[in-house]
Length: 276
Image 1 (cartoon, rainbow, N blue to C red):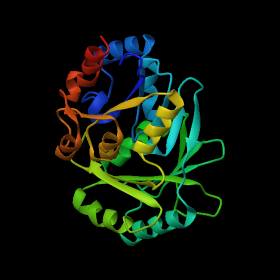
Image 2: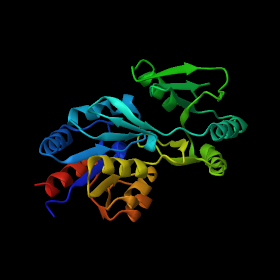
Image 3: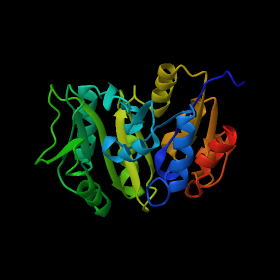
Image 4: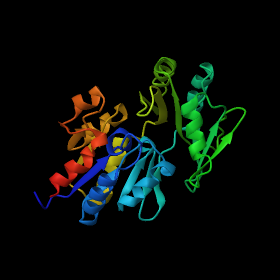
């Protein structure tokens, strides 16, 4: 068993991060030490690069899954390795659905060098306003407020994201589910009583990103950690799927194992015990 290479991959918000959306000192010390000893560890998140910079302090040597599988970012080279855009016609249909519901989202577009440009028409609630204020000046992606979102033939749309009341998003989600070529996901925000609705290519998932990193790392098996509905497929596809104690019920029901709570450093403590 000692000769078997295991890849450990964890979701961030509600799983590896605390209630303050940060890595605790104990988690940082444990995981960074284990990585230095040779443990294969990375993350799979709905976040993009501007939000996962906190992971650099862990010394991760593998790619990281971002935007729920749309992007693979390589920490050692500080560059994107792969990108999975939405087909143009499918992206236009998503925009049409959002327009019909008078609820446009943040629309992520990538250029040929993986530069990310985010367009939006208006900010609908405090969570979206905070999202914009925190990220508007970062070096990893640019934001532009436009009068009307348009998907041109030259655009590489990679992601739609919005946050709102569940009742406001449910019907939008159901309509987008009918569009071929995209995968919508609807799940609760870890830090408010609102829900996220995110849309990306059906060819991009956390599970597929996890499998790709397993291949790149030459690992024999994968152990995955998660807490929310966008983690379910990844946990099911892993050799061992682990839910934290404060995970959504559906996630715990599909997991092979349930450990302690995220805000009590459960992932790091479990890793330390397994790699002692």
